[in-house]
Length: 166
Image (tube, rainbow, N blue to C red; front, side):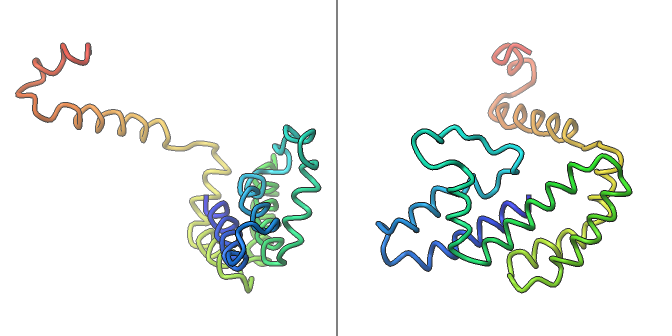
C-alpha cells in the first residue's frame, strides 16, 4: 500500500539523518519501529510490553523524533479509519476530506501518496463500495505461470504431468 511506503520512506529519511552514530538510541528505536508505525492502532499488540515499554510509549517516543513522521503516521491512521467505515457515503466523504488535508501536504512522501489516491480515486471507491477484488483471478494467473515456468524443458504436457501429479 502506498501509505506503508510513505511512512517507511519518512522513517528511513529521518533514520539517515541519525546515521552518523548507529549506536545512538534514537537510531535503533527508529529502525525497530518500522512495523509499529505501519500497523493500524486497532491491531497493535502489547506482546513486548513486559520486556520493553508499552506500545503507546514506544510509539510516542518515535513520533517525538520528527514532526514529518507524525504527519505521515496520522495520514496512514486516518486512511485506516476510512477503510473501517461501514457506510459507503461516509467513506466517500471521509476520503474527500482526507484528500483535501493531505493533498497539499508539504511532506513529499505523503503528498505523493495522496496524489496517487487522487489519481486512482474511482478504483478505490469501487473497491470500497463493492468489496470485490481480482485477487482470485490474479492467484490463478500466477499458478498457471508457475506451472508454465516449471514445464520448460519438457517436450510435451504428457511428459510433464507425471512429474507434477496433475
